[in-house]
Length: 159
Image 1 (cartoon, rainbow, N blue to C red):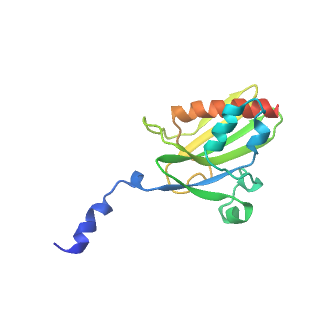
Image 2: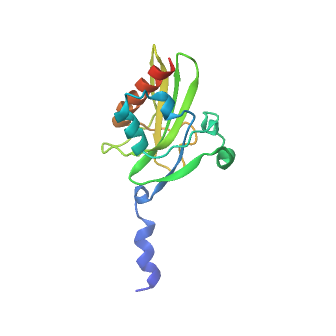
């Protein structure tokens, strides 16, 4: 058997087995969002991985400027990339880009928008390499639940 034929199965391997890289940054400092008495949420945010705070992560994000603005990329093992955009009553908007665990039931092919009297938010997820640069096209119910928790604390802090 020719040695290159041994590599043939790799050509048909599923792409979701590859490690995806995601942009990882935020325009908001988590310490300003959570009160001192919210230690569980603060610990959870710290455990979820370092996400650098930089204005370069804003919704008008430009790929060519990412290294200069402090935006990093990180491997997203068994997860998907996400982008969360939110605006509170103060009309100040923020963005959070990162990696989140992949939900077992799959991913829908649209973003999720949430709006109420406290503000509005859009959560998008994607599975491609560095795909969370702009509006992406998928969301899961787990991420919707996750987003409600985040938006509750963020909007409470900024309003």
